[in-house]
Structures are given as structure tokens and as C-alpha cells.
Length: 186
Image 1 (cartoon, rainbow, N blue to C red):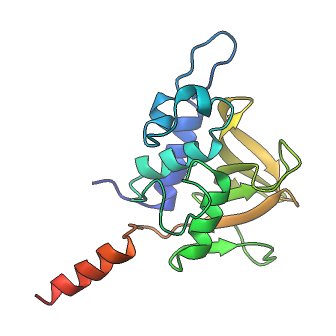
Image 2 (cartoon, rainbow, N blue to C red):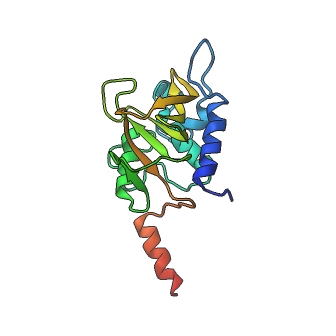
């Protein structure tokens, strides 16, 4: 079993960004099948140009975090959508969600949600922090010009929030965890 830590998540994300993963670009066939596979109602054509959140999900699973594609907290869509990551983080008290907190310092393995990076809309991009620098962050991201990349971004108003999944995190749906607790006393 993999050690689910943010440190390991950052290493996985860095490695995956350097593969690189890509959609249909420069005459190359997409190699996103591994990113799309967990989402049964999605295919490579639909994912092309829209896979940044699926990249984050894939990295989390590869790092050993146990998260379903659509946790109960996600009301809008599954975790291939940026907004779902915010719903997931704000709905599960075990996950830290940091928005507009001047004293919060992001760390390697935190997830970063962006607004208005590529389009003039909220929740338009997501990535995984590799390093916090003085006025920037270094992040592993999927779907930057339809490729995975390591990119330095300013720590500015485009950052909507940071999500910190605790080391060892395992999602249990409410019914499952209640059943699990009741069986312990059996």
C-alpha cells in the first residue's frame, strides 16, 4: 500500500507533469487515457483541453489517497471538475480549505485552485503545489496548452484557495463509516 502523504503527492505530480501528459497536440495522439479512465462517463475526446482537475485526481490516487471520483460532498460534478474540489474540501471537515488567509503558507502537496487563469471565470484551473517561493508558487498542472507542465505562478488574486488533504486521508462515505464503527463493537 502506498504512503498517502502530501510530500509524496508533490513527487508524483512532478513526475506526471514531466512525462508529459497531453491531449491531441502537435499532431500527437492524446495519452490521457490513464487520466480519463477513472471517470466512466468521460472519454479522451471530451477530456481534450479540459483535464486539469482530472490530472490532480489522478496524482492523488497515484500517491495513495483514497478518494472516490464523486464524494458525497460534490454536488455539482465529479472530481474532474475544479468546482468539485472546492465542494469536496469545504464539505469534509478533515480537509483544510484556505481562502483569503494572509497567514496561510502553502506547502508541497497542497492543491491550488485558481480563478481567471485562462478564462474570465471562477474555478477555471487547478494544480498541485511543488514549492512556495517568495512571491510565487511552483506548481504541477495538467492542461496548460493541453499539456502537463511544471509552472511558476504569481501568488496573487488568481489563486482562489488552497486545499490541504491530511496525510493518510481515506474517504469513507457516511453510511460506510457508520457501519464500520458499529461493527467494531460486534
